[in-house]
Length: 159
Image (tube, rainbow, N blue to C red):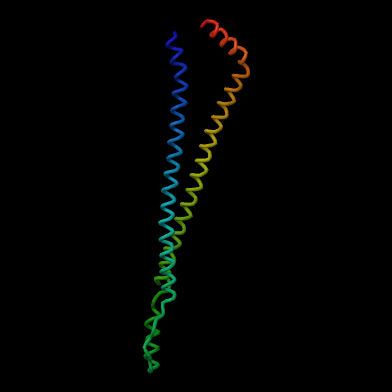
């Protein structure tokens, strides 16, 4: 029977140690996920900046034409340039790509906020568990203090 009570006392300690290891591993996992999201966002920001620079360069691009003395030739040049569909221009294509990247960045920000909330909940649950254990310990000590003192005296007298 004595061996069984020793196992009963070690069982809660083992569970507490495993819960602590689980909690620490969970926090490390959240930190790793935060780092991944941070790096993904940095990559997207670099891509967004590149696209913005390309769009700016395309908009600022100046096209020089040779001098045209014949009005018919000038008209034919303007007609050949007109068939280009503005929805398929490089600026519009880059603009759509920019919107896609900004949407991805918004998604990353949302995932980071979700992870932050989950981490905060995990930390709060662990702190609450520690507060409850501390309260239980102090409550036990307060209510059983007299009995514990008597038991200590008996042990000292037996020695």
